[in-house]
Amino acid sequence: MNLVWKLLRQHISVPQIAGFFFANLFGMTIILLGYQFYRDVIPVFTAPDSFMKADYLIVNKKIGTGNTISGRSANFFPSDIETLEQSPYVKRVARFTSAEYRIDASIGVNGKRLLNTEMYFESIPDDYIDVPLEQWKWKEGDQSVPIILPRSYINMYNFGFAQARSLPRISDGLVGMIDVELSLHGRGSTDIYKGRVVGFSSRLTTILVPDAFMQWSNGKYADQTEVNPTRLIVERQPNKEQQLNSYLEEQGYEAESGNPNAEKTISFLRLIVGLVVVIGIVIAILSFYILMLSIYLLVQKNAVKMQNLLLIGYSPSQVARPYQVLTVSMLTIVLLIAVAIIMIARTYYMGMIELLYPQLPTQSMFATLIIGIALVVLVSLFNIFAIRRKVMKCLHPTLE
Image 1 (cartoon, helix red, strand yellow):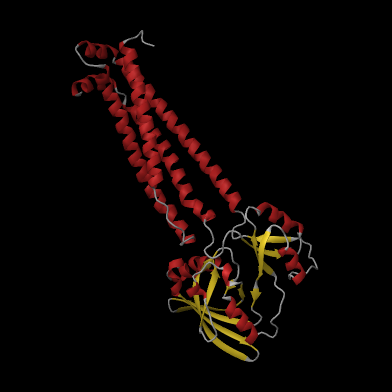
Image 2 (cartoon, rainbow, N blue to C red):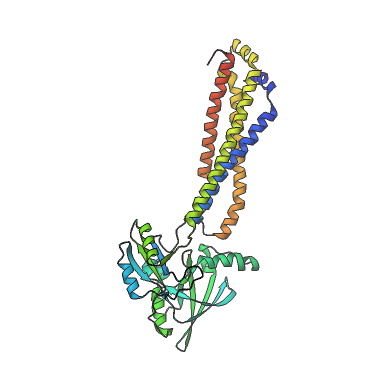
């Protein structure tokens, strides 16, 4: 093969081969990076809430449209709840219970006091919360109250206080760093409790406490304990999402969601990634065309040498092998460099994603590597076949 290579490499065009190499590298990188980026980002929009199942909807009344302020009450009366429970699209309904007393809170991180603020508590029945019972239980006499915070709170801390004051960022696994001191005021009493954060929720816009604590504290501190709720939690019947949404719209209700634009965002993201991958495929195809054109020109220029090699005993496979090895080697190097580029780019954008969503699970690059290897194998096999066929046709001009 060394002798064959020495004879055939004389007419190799370095600019043509370089053009193939960089065009293929560009195309391969775009395809694999687009796919890996999609895998890394899609959990942001599809990850389920940590504490509430997807079948649970948070429902409230529509108050007004546009600039029109309605005189309609925002509270759900018993008749409203009964009507909703009788809907064929609803499995069960529960109410949010709000704290009817004043709550002052002091919040710190890792022993460092950050702010003092007034808080607002709500609760729902415990079986709607997907938290281990030992973490969520509370009984009279306990001085520690488990709470679930909105994820927007922790994002505000990570990008506000943490950056400005060089404090550690907090993820789901580091909730123990948050110090919360609660002062409950009502009926002439003031008591201090310690808040124990058990996690964060992207669907809740309120601070949640166990229902047992809410019922007890309202009984002790609130002037009035029976207040009509302004929000309900509704569990829908299986496969009745569209019907329930239409029913709620007819009743003048609206369902809150942790990310109301998630479906639109996912569709848009898929469209963008699809366009990027198509562009990468087009570039890869053009680079393949450059390669094949270069190989065909080389074969044509070396036609006489090839015929002589065949006459002295070399087989068509031996004559074609240098070109085949050249293309397969370049494709392999292209894949390795593309993977290295993706790893560098991924380190950059994953750093930004983890700042926004520190709890997001990290996706592996295994599927991307498999796709890259499959592309190299597919293109290599096609190259090997096309080069051999061109060599055979050059050696035997009458061959079709």
